[in-house]
Length: 93
Image 1 (cartoon, rainbow, N blue to C red):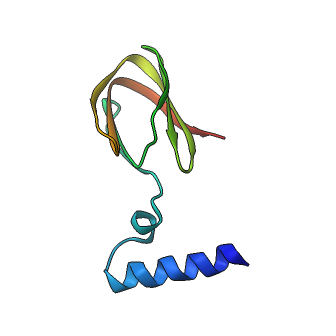
Image 2 (image 1 turned 90 degrees about the horizontal axis):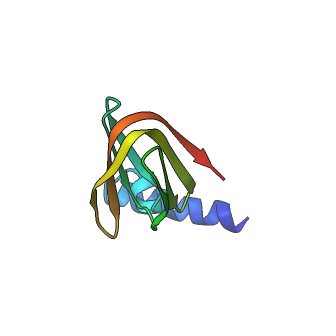
């Protein structure tokens, strides 16, 4: 019941400020540029970092990025950009 109430409040706030509901809720936002770059907003840290696999913690679960020659191109408190040859991005719970 509490979850439905919170969802309604978030929907109302999103409408009031003309923002997407996922942005208001703080959910992860993922963008990919081909298979060369991945941009992720709303992360809470890197859990593991290797050239073929990077695990990123988010409020929605762990995002596992696999590929070749993966590197962190940029990272702030709220966003991360990963470069390399990206083979897959999957949510791991």
